[in-house]
Image 1 (tube, rainbow over the protein chains, first blue to last red):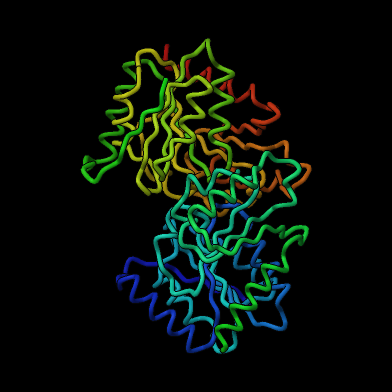
Image 2 (cartoon, rainbow over the protein chains, first blue to last red):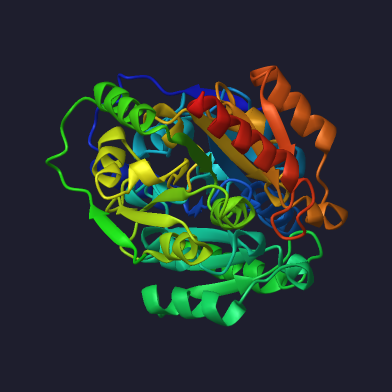
Length: 222
Length: 222
C-alpha cells in the first residue's frame, strides 16, 4: 500500500482530550488495539515497528501512523515495506502528535481490516507525553546508548506509561550502561510498568514484547 | 563551586529575541565566547562538556548552563565536577531553553572570570532550534547510534547551526551507520557547517573540536 501524507494545518482547533476520546471510540468499535510509541530520536522506534510487523504478520493485520516534523515519509515507507498499512503525518515542525492528527489519519486507514495500530510519535522525549491520542497504551522506547540516567532526567516520559522497551541491548558490551541504575529509575517513577529489554537487530528478548502485543490484541477482541 | 538551580516560572514574559540580544551584549562585554549545544537525549552532550572542560582547563576558564526538564541537577553536577562554574536551569517540564532563562543564569555566573560559556540545552532535537539564546554559535550534537537518517528527519536542527559534532564514532564497528548518507544530509541542509566526528570516550577526533572552540575564544578576544 502506498504511503499517504496528512498535512497538519492551523485549522485544527478542537480540544485534544475530546478528540482523543472519539479516536478511542472509533478504535474500540473496530476492535483495533492501538499503542503510542514515544522516545528520543534514534532509539529505534521504526526498527521496532518493522520487526513487530514482520513477527506478527500475516496472523495479525497492522496499521502504522508515523509522525515526523518533515515532509519526508522515510519511516512510514519503512513500515509499509514491512507490510503495514502506513500513514505519514507531517507535523510541519511541531514536536509531537495531537489527537486530531490521529483522527485525520484514522480516516485514511482500513480500520475494520486491522488488529493492531502502531502510532510512532515524533522523536522527542519531552513533549509527546503531554498529549493523549486515544490509543490504549503508551510505550516509551529507550535505547542503551542513550545512557542509564534518562529516567531521572525525563521523568514525564517514564511516569504513567504502560510499557517500556529498552532497545539495542546487543550494544551493552561496548557501553558503560548501568542496567541496575536505569531500572531503579524506571521503577521509582513507574513501579508496575512492563519492561522489555530487547534488540531489534539480534532479536534477543523480542518474543516477550510480541507476546505483550498479542495479549493486548486479545484483550481488545474479548 | 556548588551547583545553583534557576527555577523557571510563568512570570517570564519579555520577548525572547530582545532578551537574546541583551544576553549577547553582556557576553561580548565580558569577552566570553558562548555556544549552545542542541541534541537528542543521550547523544552525549554532557560527556562533551566534561571532556571539553578537562581539555581546556586551566588555560581557559569555563562556565556551563545546563537545561533540564527535571529538578535533578545531574548534568550540571557533572560539569561542576569537571571544573566548570555550572548553573542548572530547571525548565519545569518545558522542552527547550529560552533567552530569559539564560539571562537569569548569567546573573549567577562570574562572567568576567570566564573565557567560554557552554550552554547545554534540554535534550530535544525539535524545539530548541527555534529559540535564540544570545550565544555566538549553535552546535548540534549527533551520535552514531541514532542512525544516519537524522538530518533528513530533523532538518530544523541541522539547518543554520554553526557546527556539528558526531559523537560515539568508537561504536561505528557495531552499528549500521552510513556515514556518506549522514554527511550528504548534513551538507544538503548546511553546506558550510564545521563537522567534528569524534568520540568523547576514546578521544578520537577531539582535538579538532577543541581547536574550533579555542579559535572562537580567540575571535571573541580580538
